[in-house]
Image 1 (cartoon, rainbow, N blue to C red):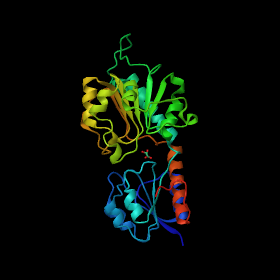
Image 2: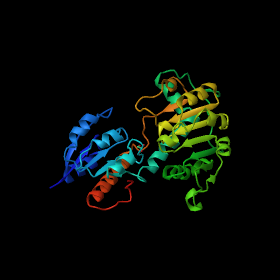
Image 3: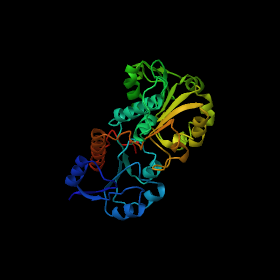
Image 4: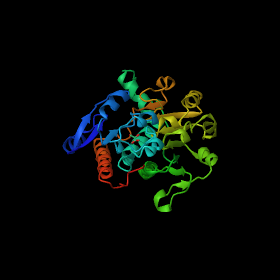
Amino acid sequence: MKRRLVVTRTMPPTVTARVAAAYDARFLDMVGGFDAEIFLAALDGADAVLVTPADRIDAALIALMPVSLKVIGTFSVGTDHIDLDAARASLLAVVNTPDVLSFATAEIALTLMLMAARRAGEGERLVRALAWRGWTPDFMLGSSLEGRTLGILGMGRIGRALARMVDGLSMRVIYHNRTPLPADQAHGAAYYAGEDEFLAACDVLSIHLPGGAATRHWLNADRIARLRPGAIVVNTGRGSTIDDEALIAALRSGRVAAAGLDVFAAEPAVPAGYLDMETVVLLPHLGSATHETRAAMGMLALDGIDAVLDGDHPANQLV
Ligand code: DGY
């Protein structure tokens, strides 16, 4: 008998095909907000679920899950949408999708850096509005990244992929982590143990922190005040790590020159203050959004689910 798997969102075609072939599958194809009632109703007799960062799997929901359920697979590397302690207490395994999205997410960080520095969003809006009056020497000047310092906050897999990627930009790369990396993983980036020294040295701050209580509003008014004046802030980690009111105020005053944001605390809602600011580039959480990456994420999550159901402990099992 096939195992029963509940899938909350529409998956890439190759992932859907594998699920349909290997499982007794229930596809919920949710769009927008997560509907916990529909989800719970579909769980009857389920062995596993495949959820996404848009689905809030909190302790209250976990408490209502059937005993048949053995594993929660998440189509993401981030797990702040799942109460891992509650899963552990309920003897539920959780598997995620590390590694396979690092390059794609670093690409979006680089895209945002370049767009913010070179006013690409503003320029594109101007062209589309038929408001471009022609080339002049003083028209829409931005700043080059050449010779600037990129500060990577959180030198995990994605931060390291970004450090490798900016090689051609002649940037100096520094990073701040709890602990320094072995030299062969740092790709020449200099470790700054002290937060003050790190912030003061950043021309571009690229945030790669996980979500959750420990990192909530990491970039607050106090830390913004310690950033190098005129810095650019980029975030491809989790929106909750930025105090949006503080960043909006700093962008308005020019203390922060520009920002590139791919993630937001209450997605898909975007704080209104950003919307009319030309100096902010806003993307709809595209970090891992390539055909190849999303297919690989689905395959890795399914590999993990299969392994747990087979009684193994796969490398991508967190709990
Ligand atoms: C993740 O995997 O956590 C990403 O945010 C999805 O792009």
